[in-house]
Length: 568
Ligand code: ARG
Image (cartoon, rainbow, N blue to C red; front, side, top):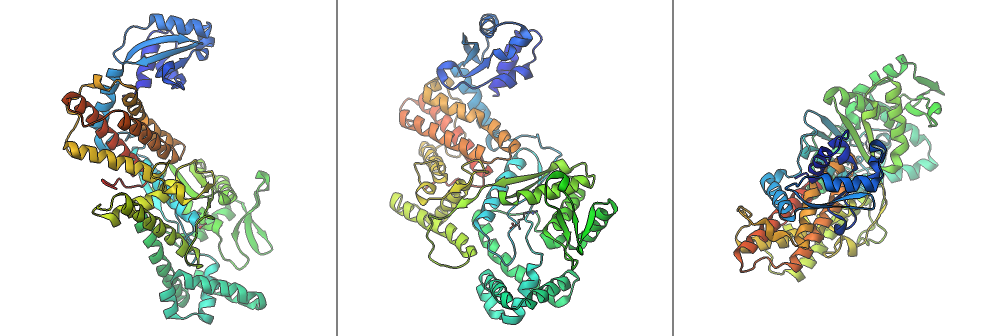
């Protein structure tokens, strides 16, 4: 299956003093198929072998014995080009995919290792905004990808459920709040109170003192403030859960910032002991001037803890609890400095695992082109965004396939999938724009395009009566030597590498982009090569390819958190 390593073994066997691993690392996929399926840039060997690249290529081409997987080689411009034996390639790839089934591309590189994934992490009583959506979607994909590669994954929703804002909220609620209104209005009503606090506090700065006092009470475990805080949290969580349900996302732990409340004293002590803590006008901080960073604030002058304090406590706790191999934090790049600062503090504390903390940052989503029916808070906006996607998809389905049975469910899978896919369609660090035209374009580079390709291929299998059975049990691979079939096979063959790469780079877009490539190559095949033909052997071979393609698309969609509807 792994043609690169097969070729490397082969080439290495004809060379002295160069091992297969080194050859494999040098091997490339040429830009066009007439330059071979794989090629070895021989200039990378000239120093070791003390020969000119073209001479190496020519000698290799001559010396290499015949090989069942490779039909021929050429030497051109210092490259050794290797051409697959098309029949053998079709056979190896299809057998590998069909045999592995749901596990094609899975691995055990993570066996015995744990990754902690801190993602989504919205703030209580504040909007679940589009940045949280992106964190949720990227974190969820990374979770699935790591799990597929054998890691033990711990997904943590590090809820922003602690901090001075709760003092403000309690103050506002006590002054202007009403129980029923909060129950009915949810986060929006909490937001209204919070905003009112800020407006009123401009004229009455003593409100700020009151808020601080409430937060200090809360940190000390005062009953009344705790009860209110719990209630705010419940109300917010109900709304967040609606979004998680739409997305099909779950967490292993909801230990938010408040969870570390009783663990922060020890952190402060440890920082003191290690001589890292410095007093500054009554507040405490860790200076990071030597690293060209602003100090990390640990305690305010009223003793309240901060975002940094809680992240440090959480990291120490997670390390102790999960002994992680890596701990990743998925947030907007605007938090870059925050993470750099406290990662540095952890390393200054002498934790030799500090380099296992990784900030997985991503760019902004520009929602300017989206019109919302309400002028309300962002929470509504986000849920509305998902609902709009579902409604619009439903309209498309109504016109494309009016007799589809479970329209609502399919509209949800495709509508939500469209938004998710858009979030994952490019390198995460890039800002992304949002236009309904692109997001829902069934012909473009979109989630619906991949899902639609899948559904179409599945319908061919159903028509052939092999949708659930084992097609490909006995196909003639020599009937898949044409360029369109070979291109699909190549895309399928590289899928496992892409999964690995997505894991290494913490970049789910590697998989989404690859799904587009698979779907595009499949659609070319589908147009050029009729599948349900009379000729039984040809039909069986093409069906085997369709079935393998469906299997891989389904796995890939699952890895990035999308569903694979049978019909659209
Ligand atoms: N609640 C934060 C926010 O909304 C994100 C938290 C990210 N995770 C962390 N451990 N700091 O911006």
